[in-house]
Image (cartoon, rainbow, N blue to C red; front, top):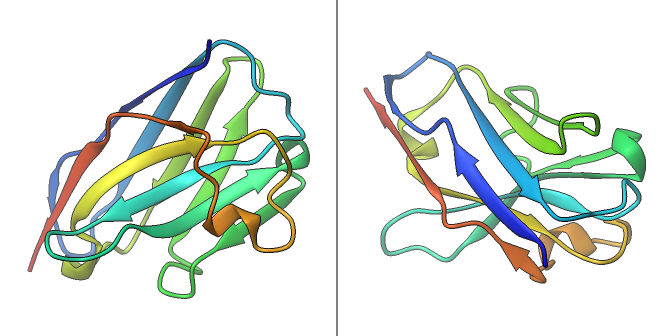
Amino acid sequence: QVQLVESGGDSVQAGGSLRLSCLVSGYIPTSHCMGWFRQAPGKEREAVAATSNGGFYTYYADSVKGRFTVSRDNAKNALHLQMDSLKPEDTAMYYCAADTRSCAGGFWQIMNRYWGQGTQVTVSS
């Protein structure tokens, strides 16, 4: 049984930074896709970033490229999202997700096997 628990959400001003963490209980092979999604009020959930193959491959939404960094700590069974240069439009509930195959072929944007409960990020201008 895999469970994902997010932490690290907070309220920050534009230009600030946050680091989200997702602690995994259970086993997810390093080859499998893990990532972050977000959902703002009134909007659809969108894929933000993902990684697979032990962190060798990373994927990012265009809106966060160059500002967010996804990483996986295999020793601590955790996934992180370093968010820098935050903007008000980054405000959303952020969810950790994982699935049972690699992220390749665009799969990182539609994975849905495991989900965390979410952590709120609020960026004020």
